[in-house]
Length: 213
Ligand code: GRF
Image (tube, rainbow, N blue to C red):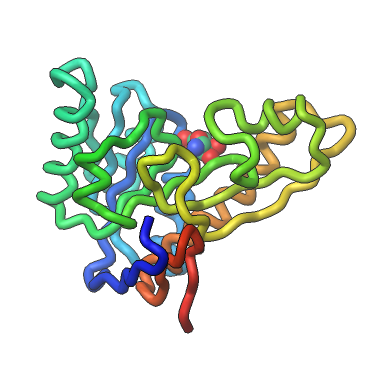
């Protein structure tokens, strides 16, 4: 990553592509925020890698085009990522939001959308990257964990951090209770972060996401 990267993209149309694999509650938070005009954006397409993802139904109920691309239909990871890029480009997507998308993103997608892919992760990164972040936090014994929205780079869960929210860990927490409280924060900060990124008034300096008002 360069020391200072100017990224003031023309997000004029503010069109989002949302990638999911499952429940889709963060997708729902984005849908609700756009409907309530807290987030001035259009969700142009929802893509799932799993046909049974409940999030596809949520998209359908909201009148949003939703499709499944099955990785098994493609020769390799790059071919799959290229297919996603093709779908996103045909809908003129400006910004890609990963919302519980359980696949690593490869060069075809990252190169097509440089600093234009966002992810939400249920911990205060860089603590507890990867899967089961809430369980990792509970088992480690931290007193505070939370949620992070970051730009996606080739380094998984390690891109520049757009925003974070802290969630205290209670003595009687289970993975389920802790996950539920983190999720409330996820749903609050993801639309805010998308709005911030779409505003375009930011740069990446080193590994810092810096806003310019
Ligand atoms: C969320 O906890 C998110 O942080 C993580 O995967 C989960 C997806 O949940 N990346 P949902 O599908 O948005 O309900």
